[in-house]
Image: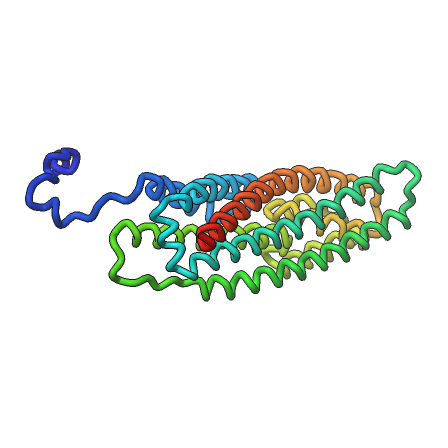
Length: 291
């Protein structure tokens, strides 16, 4: 049996007429990249795994950009309105993620600059930290709204294609649906990561209450499994609420800000790449419609 599957001559007999044609090689490539993206640490929330996931999405979107140039794709896009809307959905959520990251980046740099000033007093620094935390609340609210929109989008992006499609067309429609779903899932993971929402809110507040007790506990040991965003949020709250060891709190902030800066740089590069590619895909789709 194994030999018959590997021998192309086997298909030249009576069974060949019943077998569908093979999908376009680019469709196969996209499917392989899609499967790789799905398998890339779905339950992990580490920054390295998230960066790996975004890189996988970059490869996939880059291939989709080539895919929409095919004559077959252009014909499908002309008749599947939901696929056209999908390019805009992905662009919107990518833009929301970029905006949230940029806002956090600007606040991070301002706080780092404040900490580096030799003449910066505790009162002045505390005020800047509080401004940062207030800014984070604004970002979290924007992320929460984007996630709500994303949830509604995911529920309404099902595509029902005609049953009288040929095999190649069905394979393409199925792929484009799956690509949108995987991309939306990746952006959802990214937004949740950037929101810095602790995995256990009760544990987070328990950590803060412990930190402001006379017997001090290190922030890093309490939130090691949280995202850099969550760790920085907690480090800043430690500084604001703790009454002792302010110098240690400042050192903790410095360390978390450095980690955040590195994390933001990696995410920013990935999002910028995706945003440019998604714009190109959107332009290609519109050009198809206009011709």
